[in-house]
Length: 212
Image 1 (cartoon, rainbow, N blue to C red):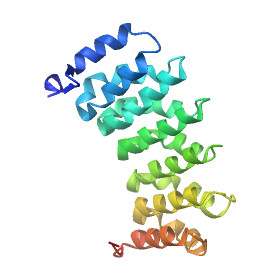
Image 2: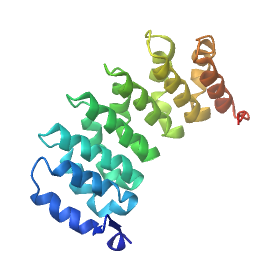
Image 3: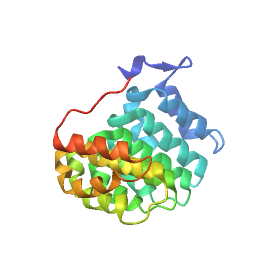
Image 4: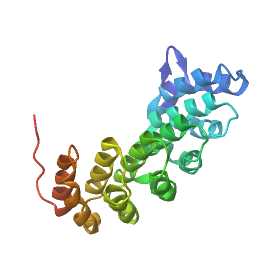
């Protein structure tokens, strides 16, 4: 139970108490310490989520990072994380997407924000938003059309992002069958072909080779 969890000799309740009275410069480190408790930080989720709206970018970023470490048990923070995908700071948008990726299928509540993030000016945000949509599994079906369009229809310049788009479609699985034509086209893109080929196999329910 979380009351028996400690980080650097301090229980979760100790960090929560400090968070409420700490200075702006001290709060990021406290939030990161709370994140270090992982799933044991469940009682702190609401307090961490509130920090996503802090006036300090460093505090907001630390809160998003903490939620990325807390994982799926931090699902009550999903609406706030979705709002953070529109933050003015690209670092914050990226880490918010990472936190939503860590939520797994529960992040379906943020699917609209994640789809919108595929158009972000930052390639890291675009890539991680795609990853998060893939982590929704079959629940990501409403995003398939947009993922497919970004894979082959919007001149995405980053191979890194294209791989995430292809992999996301594969992770959605058979529910992404409508993306097969786009993925077939993507097999012709240098350094993206292997991700597209693997996605096709996953969607078709065929074995995916494992390389050692």
